[in-house]
Image (cartoon, rainbow, N blue to C red; front, side, top):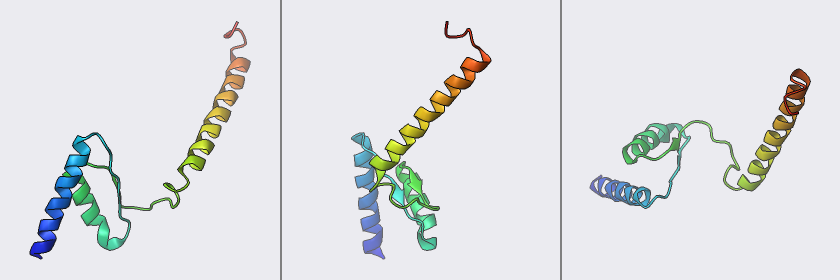
Length: 93
């Protein structure tokens, strides 16, 4: 138990030093046993965390997800322009 406490403090100090250098850390722990511990540890160190459902592949497929997100935003903007041009035909003139 003493070793766990010591290592936990070391980990917390490491996380704080990473945060001070301007880098981000994300804690992910969705198992029932880890939820409370993850939230407490993350809040103590001031980092974001996920302790509920995590969408698998978010890290490994980030480029694909981001590309699809940008495509959806582009389509949404085009649709809004069309709607606005029909509602306000003289707006762009």
